[in-house]
Image (cartoon, rainbow over all chains, first blue to last red; front, side, top):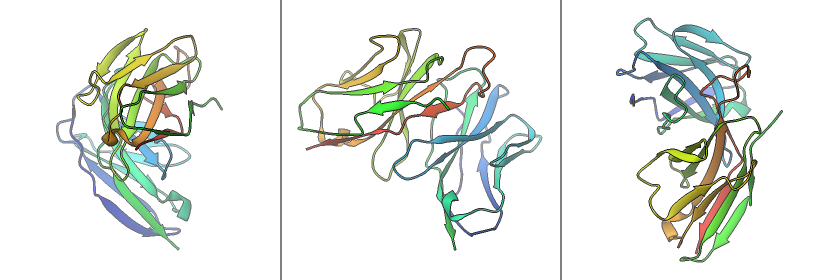
Length: 111
Length: 119
């Protein structure tokens, strides 16, 4: 399993763009990068998944450089409701068992 | 939108008692999971279940724990002889829509959790 490293916490202000970077130096060829969000007292919620280059959906963008040893989750124009813990996971493609949550990044959005 | 449901939302039990946590996964999903999260700590994988058998389990999932899919809709986690350190939030998740589904293959859908308090 590829180990991931991400900052323990980040602070931001409403309306700013937030970028959370995750390192996964030993990512394998078949691994995908997935980000989850967790609000207090709720289960994690899928945000975005990618393999390489850039992926964008209605919530976030995911930037993955060519070497795939890191990835950056970008949240445009955050609001107070984006305050949550964000987890970066690396999992083998088509292997639904192969996911482990790290400590995550606790994002606090201030007014 | 389909969702994973869990019951009860909060379970209080005495140390040494058995508890059963219940989950109803999304109906066309094939893979089922249990996780736990001790207050203030990270989400920890317990077990995954596919085709009516355990496909993977963590070192946490010892003989005290068991899972079952008793019918076509429910997925249960049984904890025998609960200990104080079993107090945590337990999350059920499901994934793996049938071919042609819209979800990303590895996307796991989590339920709202059951808060287990062992006294």
